[in-house]
Image (cartoon, rainbow, N blue to C red; front, side, top):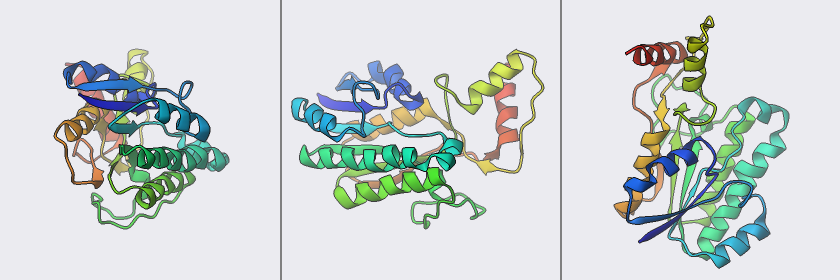
Length: 232
């Protein structure tokens, strides 16, 4: 039996892990949210990992408010930087493999084509810089880790573009969506399964991985696809 702790379990991706967990009978899950396991509380983390035995830690805990991070960057760095460092140090002490969720915001968006793992990072806002800081801490502290960079997460859980478009359409609101920004939407349920399949396969190809739905589009294109599928 593989023992996994999932932090940030009440967030969008954390809820997707809860949804698919019954499909993985060989995994024992422990789900922790910020109330019962705050990754910025180093002492609480120490006590938790001393008391519990795990094989993997999937860190979904993150500060994700991109706009607010510009106004209060210290909060973003506390969670996405120092909090990740705290988790990585506990994983090292207790020989856990860390699976950490990162973002395309570690890049500047100027490439003009899909980013690959070897591309140089160059975040242009505080959120991206804080997420990159977390990545750097992991690489400094651990040898066995997976950093999964993803983008435009959507699902039936939490607050996301997919749900916003559906709700506005349902209410009959006029929709105004930009077509100047391009990215790759990512089904959070598929991402959860991708990560769990890495774990059950005992993948040792540690390091950084990129995961999306694989289709680049603008926000306008994405909204159009959402509305088409909902009309079927």
